[in-house]
Image (tube, rainbow, N blue to C red; front, side, top):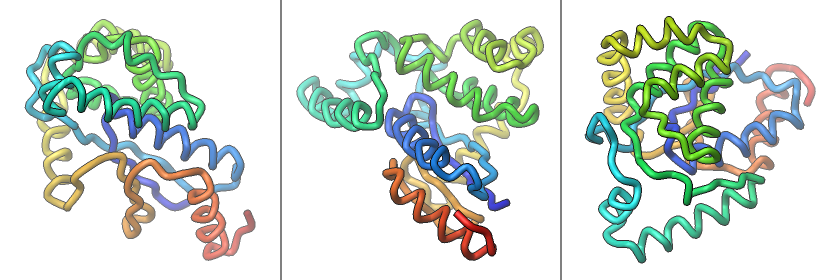
Amino acid sequence: MIKLDILSDPICPWCYIGKTLLFHALEQRPDHPFEIEWHPFQLNPDMPKGGMDRRDYLELKFGGKEKAVEVYARIAEAAEAAGLEIDFGAIQRTPNTLDAHRLTHWAGLEGRQTEVVQSLFDAYFLQGRDIGDRDVLADIADSAGLDAAVIRRLLEGDADAEDIRARDANARESGVTGVPTFIIGNQHVVPGAQQPDLWIRLVDEVNGQLGGTA
């Protein structure tokens, strides 16, 4: 197996799109060699703990309503092309994602990381849920087969919070400036949301190098 490390944030639409496109490719190559692990990267590491109003956030981030509309029109087009029906209008708040990354980390310990990542994306982008809310996170944990009561207790404390912040900071120090970022075998970096054709070629190349067939 070859490690495929993915740096992402569950409120990043390009991460959702990139994940979707990657898995479209992997469905076509079920013999792919990738062992996937998700890593934290907060788009807004200084976001208030309770998050902020979505409209205020977008206008602040993009310098006004018109620019935000322009940017998200492109995102919506790319999402639709990937087969995603993102309901941007349902998103009322932009959360602090530290707790969501903590949940993703704990899910990895149970071998359910990708399921939780998918549930976080779906909850935020399709259902408009506040994934900064610990009750929502506990519910997502439960739906992925984790012990919601244990997750809730962990979230009420600071378990692994500093570790997540340190991993985020380390990614930035290593040169990561945006997500999604995919790292193959700790050597090759694939930035951004790439089309399935690119991933299929990469799988075929890696399988060929490993002596397998695609």
